[in-house]
Image (cartoon, rainbow, N blue to C red; front, side):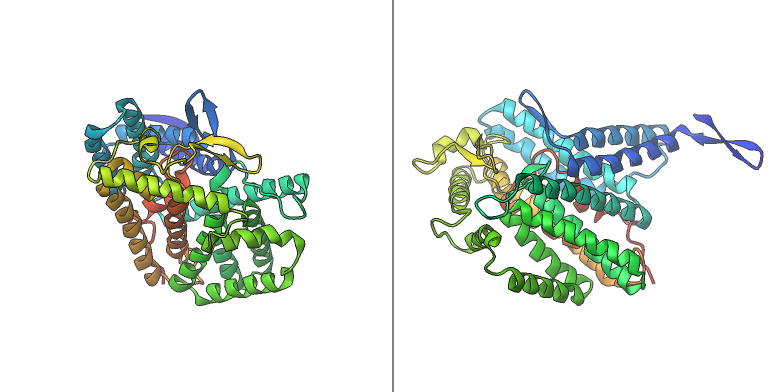
Amino acid sequence: MTIATGVVSRGAPRERPVADDLMVAARRLLWVAVLCTMTAPRIELGSVHFTLGDVLAELSAACWLASWALAPSRPMLVRAAFWPLAILGVSVVSAASSINMGATGVGLVELTILWVLPALLVPNLVSSPPRVRDFLTCVSAGSLIAAGMNIVEALRVGTVDGGLPQVWGAVQYFQGYFQVVGLIIAVSRLMNSVASKRPLSAFSWVIACMLNAIALLLTQTRGAWLAALAAMVVLGIAWRPVVLIGAIGVLSIGVLAFWGAGWTGIVGERVQSIFTLQAGLEGFESSIGRLALAVTAWQIFLAHPLLGVGLKNFPLAMPVYAPSGMPLAYEMGRDRVLTAVEGPHNTYLRLLSEIGVLGLVGLVGWQADSMRRFYQESRANRSVDHPFGTHPAVLLAAATVIAVYNFFFEMTQTGMLIFIAVLSLAYSTRSFQRVR
């Protein structure tokens, strides 16, 4: 089935298949979804929470599936969905021990929509080096928009007790991790601009690095700071050691320049609280709460090691297995909003407690396999002069951010399109053609 689009070539109208038009629409919707995922807040309709990025991603998937239905001879890459489907399969089996089948059913639908469908969609739409570049450009643009909004918000709020305000941003507590991904892209493109002797471009990427770094600092998210450090180490090892050397140099200069300044007190305490449980430090209460949640998740796992208690059943099991006196809600964010506990704030522990040890194996296998593929491609494409040669190393560093993120928050929720897309791109065979 075809329609005339009215495009004139050498005096004659050209017909383009409807399937092609749907593919173009799907790809454009995906780009907008990426931007919205990084900049738009969650939408709440009763007990249902979602983001505009999730909605647009589903519309993109609908267009892509319709395109494939109209042109079934077009190849469909499905291997990127192997690990998400394996985790989904384990989740179905674990439903046999579910405390609440209704909650488990919701969890299965969420995994299908938020993990499996994007894992199928992204590699089929982002299937060449130029399209990977477009994807990374959208992520970079989203991080810069978010950074600008965060900095404006910080200026509006002003200092808090003489220190920096905490500004999470539109996507709340995982904003910092998105800023790290934007920072990785900015650093890689800065290096490319310097190598190709384009001073104007290099200057613009210096500004991008600064905006992302400032916004990351403002989130005061300790896990994101660790993710940034890990990502720069990986980017330096996989691509250019000068990245790691430069990151250490900039960090050292910043510490020396601002050491002792009043506004750095909160930042210093939060960094210190990563490695110690000293009472009174900024972040101490959060660390204690996370430890209690980790103990609870571990106790649930020990009681249900093979099947867990069922997806989204952690809150139901928590009162039984939690340490004595542990609160069921915590104050979150700058406004100290009392928020009920919905999970252990750790994807690894959530899967371990809700669907058993095989769920954890599936997630670790997914991340490790993606990182292995990115590493192999980055070793093969180490040309800083080629515009596409940096993509595997950048995505490897982004996958490192995801691995760190999963220690501190949960990927089994809405707004995770960027992370699922990064992991899925490791399986797109044409996205990393060898560059010489």
